[in-house]
Image 1 (cartoon, rainbow, N blue to C red):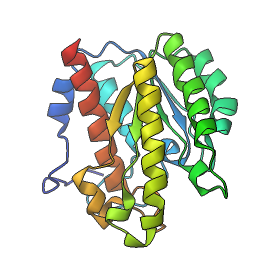
Image 2 (image 1 turned 30 degrees about the horizontal axis):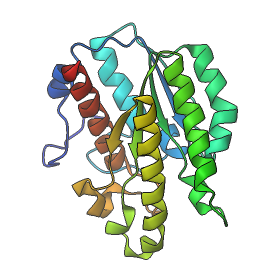
Image 3 (image 1 turned 90 degrees about the vertical axis):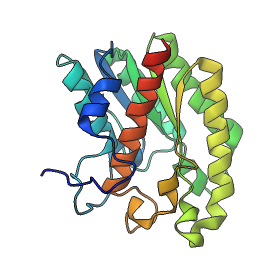
Image 4 (image 1 turned 180 degrees about the vertical axis):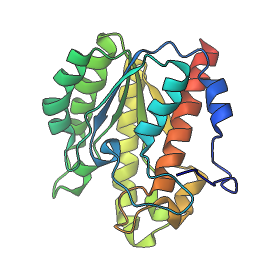
Amino acid sequence: MTEDVSTDDFHLPAKEADRLLAAAPWKRFAVLGDSLAEGLGEPVPGYRTLPWADRTQEALTRCRPDLAYVNLGLRGLVAAEVREQQLSRALEFGPDLAAVICGGNDLFRPVVDMDAVEGELDAIIGGLRAAGATVITYRLMNIASAIPQLEALSPKLLRLNERVSAVSARHGALVVDMWSHPACADISTYSSDMIHASMRGHALLAAETIRRLGRHLASA
């Protein structure tokens, strides 16, 4: 399917993505996390049914045709399970670029231990950084700006985002800040379950990932 998203103000054209990633040095790209990492989401007319991680891999591969890629993301996992089930597998793969999205499922537990969640994030991000990978992390979208029924979730999401920022700063990871992205307020960014991103949301997440990698390359 060919995309027709020219009216989407936040769309990143392939030519611009290629310019941003022209100097990309990465050869092995790994993705770790939960359902957002795995790529769950409903189709949206005009957008390819292609999750953000695959879109990012596609853009990187245009610049590095020899890129190796693995996506370990799996729906339903809390941060501790991501560490237990995916970190060692990722390290065996030997990434020089890794994306990490997890912690969101922890927020749905009856009692949320944010110190424990931060500890798991620290182990995952720190482990990847210690192995030499460039790591990119994510501050999740404020979904309540589009879905007021989820307003009670916003303080928890913000606390998680603050922990992601803290761990990322500690280990020198790159952060994609989706919390205040203008598309947060657009219902088309989300699937009908009011939790997962739609394919438009995935396209936007990929665009911001590529932009962040581009800024990193430019500063280097």
